[in-house]
Structures are given as structure tokens and as C-alpha cells.
Image 1: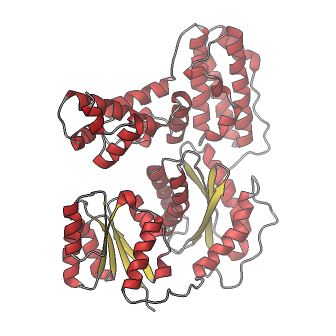
Image 2 (image 1 turned 180 degrees about the vertical axis):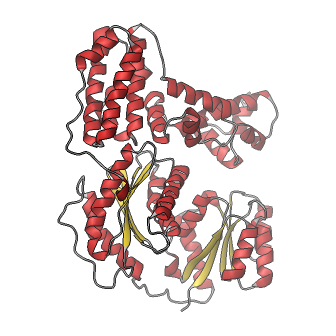
Length: 521
């Protein structure tokens, strides 16, 4: 039985991703043939693919979903449609049904069960009696080899063991040479739903960016790790295009999930060299830590001095500089330590230096009886926070700021938050009416995304998005009390593009609806 083609149309990437990956479409005889972010783009694409089923939002730029259905139905009256919308409005649902939509589903009620039941109902409504028999595809066999043979090399040890993995069966991987890409993403900040969706997102991004690639990823501790085998092409002999595509993937992960990610790329090699490629990619990924904000490193681009001894930190010298309030010399000495660490390119050396510097910082607090505060809380001296740093630059900035706060505390100053967190709060207060993100705040403050995320949560007790939502709700409360603005107008005035989402967030934070809050006077 020929697979029926599905076209997904929505202006939100994560909605499109969820629709593609939430259920097993092949189980019901469907294949995702394309996606578009507005009706006009969908019509042009549909002329090429001839979709049997269109899943579409209603409200989209350029051309909305209802107009899309009207136009598409003229070309193919048998085509089925399912409407997804934020709008619980009978007039929308009525018009959709008049246009022949199979179902109208509110996005707030869209679940895996709901979507699967809808597709199953559609499958049986078309006279089909039996689901297609499942068959294992070549890609599934390739992914099974990566999952069972290559991924354990990374998940079970700090570095892949030299014993390697069994060679793949003949013919399983058809390209002459491959690059192996290893990635790691810190995912502890993700919600349960986001963690469930995250592996599918990354796999899809890899497949779309690198033609012919096959990937596998899974969680290990608080991180998500992945392996992707990408066929080497004659058009990209130096892997420049691959580096560019992986960089785009990392940026998209940051944009959609606001979590840091790094990737390492091996040199090219045939299927008989996959174990060596895994080792190379893993080593390259580790070097991202020293790459000054670069999140992609190719194995051929790094050199590490592993035999050089660790730098010596002069405990007495640093304390003497603090005692004498010689700030510039103190900071210059800290910078010299990290300059040496960069040259050595040894993450263990950086970790050990970080612990030693925190130990000195705690000794300064005890010596001068510096009171605990947000910028110098006991948590600031926790050795385990090293795992939160994405780059060595973040480690240096943390130590730099910490020792500045120690000098202020020594002089009996009363700082509440560090300079970076104060600047972030000011950024939120000055831009909350816009669609701002943590990444934009980090760019404005000139620090890395991951470092700002970690520092903000450490000092404020909540993450950036939670603080932004609470601040917006506080401004909304003032508007609700002060005038007769409509709810959607208040939502727009405080930075919420979706009034339904605004109402939900308002109730979650205040415990009451917008209308109830206003009526209480």
C-alpha cells in the first residue's frame, strides 16, 4: 500500500516538530512529505508534493489556514485537513467544518493520545481495515549499530576506550568515507516535556542539515549526548560546510531550548575506522571548552599540550594583593593564570585551578568576616558548579567577578547582586515589552548564554524566563487596576504575543484570572 503524504503548516517551529515526531505516522500509512510556516508557502509546496492530508494552524502570516484550505481543496477535493488552533472560537470551528476539515483541535488540548486517536480515526474513516506491517528500514539498522556499538564508547567513559567497536556488517554503510560528529548538551534546566521532545528535535535538525546522516542520542546524567555519521562529499573536502551546518544546529538548539551545546567533528574515514573517528570527535568536542565561544571544533584544528605540568597558583601572593587592596595587580595575576591554562588545553588543569581559587576565596571570607549575600553566598564556593561552565572564558569571568566582590566585601560594602546580574535585571526592565530571550540578554551584556543562565539562577533563585514572566505579570497587574484595557491589549503591552498563554501564566503566578483580579479592585 502506497504511503499517503502529509503536509504540516504552522508558523511555530516547535509545533511543526511536535507534529512530525509525536506519533508514528508510518504506522497509519502516512509519511511527512513537507512542512511550511504559512499558507502561501504551503500552497507552493503542495503543488509539488500533492499532499493527501494537511495539518494547519489558522492564524499565520501572509495567508491563514482557512484560506489555505479553500485554495488547496479546489485542486484536490479528496484531500483531508485537520485544523490546529489557539482560538476556542465557534465561528472558526464552524467555518473549518464547512470547508470539510476532518477535525478542529485546540493546541491547548493537543496531546500524543489526542493526535494519535485523530489520525487513527481518519485512517479507519477512509475504509482501511488493517495497519501496514512494520518493516525495519536501512536507516533503522544503521541507527541500531550506532546505538549498540558506537554510543557506549562515549557514554561509559570520559574518553572512548581504544579497544573500539565491532565492524559494521558489509553494506550497512554505503558511503566510502564518513565524518563522525559527537555532541553534548546540558539539559538539566529543561522541563519534563522539553526533555521528552529534545532528542527528536536534535535528530531532526541533524537530518535536515546533513543529507544522508544517521544519528542516535540519549541522556546520561544531566547531559544529552549524541553521535551522528555524516557521509563525506567531494563538494566539501575540508568539512567547512559540515562545520557550518553543525554550528547552525547548535544555534537552533539554543534558540528553541535555551540550553548550551557543543560538537566535535572527526577527520574522514571509512566504516572500518568508526572507533577511531569516535575518539577523534570526542577529543575535538572537549577542545570546544578552550575555543573562546566557538561551539564546534574539528579534530584537525586543535593541538593540546598534554605533557606540560599544571600552572602553580601562588596562594600567598594572591592573599597579599587582596590584603593591600591592589585590585589591578590581583586581576592581572588571575588573568595570567588563565592565559597559561588556555595554552595548556587541559580541562583537568582548569578544574583543579578553579577549586584552588575558590578555596582561597573562602579563606578571604573567613579572614575578613565577610557576610553572606547573593553575590557571595555559600553556593558561590561550591566546587561542583564547575560543570555549569561551557567555556574557559566563563570560568575566568566567574573567578574575576568573585574576587572583585571579595574586595568590596572586605571594605564592608553591601553588594546584593553581582554586576552581571544587575545588568541583566536592567535589561529585562528596559525591554520586557519585546519578545526578548536569554540569548539576547547575554549578547547585550557580552557574556555567554550558558554563563548568564547559571549565574542568574544562582543569585536570583529562579531562572531568566521565570523572572521575566513574574516581572511582566507585575506590570500587567498595574495595567489591569489602572485602566479599562482589554485582556489581549494588556498581554501585548507587557510582551505576551498570545493572550491565551498570558492568561494562563497570569493565573499560575497570581492564583487568579485576569478578570477576577480586576474585579477585586
